[in-house]
Image 1 (cartoon, rainbow, N blue to C red):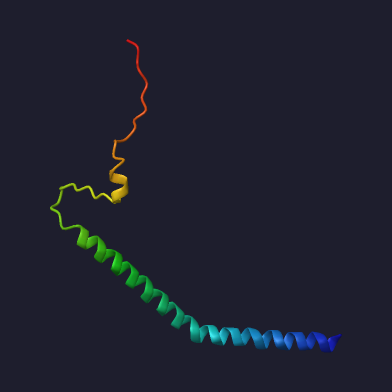
Image 2: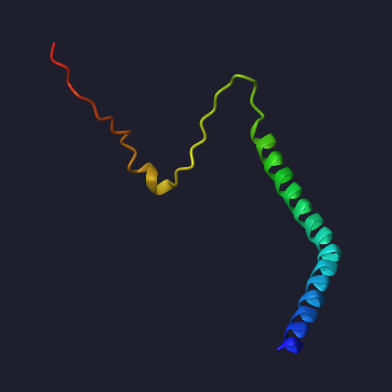
Amino acid sequence: MLIGLLKFLFWFFVISYLIRFLGRVFLPIMLKRFINKSSEKFKQQYDNMDTHSNNKEGEVTIESNKTSSDSSNDVGDYVDFEEVDE
């Protein structure tokens, strides 16, 4: 029973130190990759936003994403209202 406990403790410490060592080696590399990917994604989103903002300040534009099949059924928006008796 004592030998089993000693084996367990030995392997526990060996594995924990191995995980610590590998974490110190690979964690910075993985974090750098994650930061680079995130910054690249942010830069792409910022560039897309910058290309769409060619309008003057205060000018309002409405961009429609409708397909051609939706344009044949263009009857307007339905507004629900209640009549008020005066």
